[in-house]
Length: 184
Image: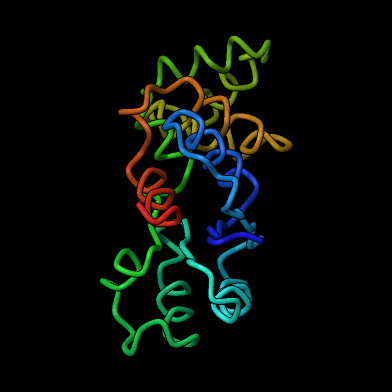
């Protein structure tokens, strides 16, 4: 049985956390990472987890903070609806999302390198860059869009991007949710 649970929005978050634990040398054997399949499911999963009296933490996209704050309140982990509570209670936001954190941590050129090592045909990425709505935008924004546009691309690359990082490059929310979840 797990002594701690880390709630994450999707499969890519889970893959990234598992890879980050490896990069950081953290042992996840007593920790379960549960996929919420979206932040709107947090109340139910949080209630189930809290009722088992295990340490609970979470990773979410900053745009979902209202759901997280409301869920923490509804299950009784906080007495007020306050956006300062999530981190104090072990819930950490990715700004803007997981892909944004990973791209910022590595930089665009190393991300493109990782993509290239996977035999990915970068013509699709180059096509996206030429679309009127993406032309002239930052390559980091284009990469975020590209990761979200392909079949399971987010999941596939989450662990690969984290695996390409040194321990000091692991984004703050990933590091902190692991540290909190593991009781460090």
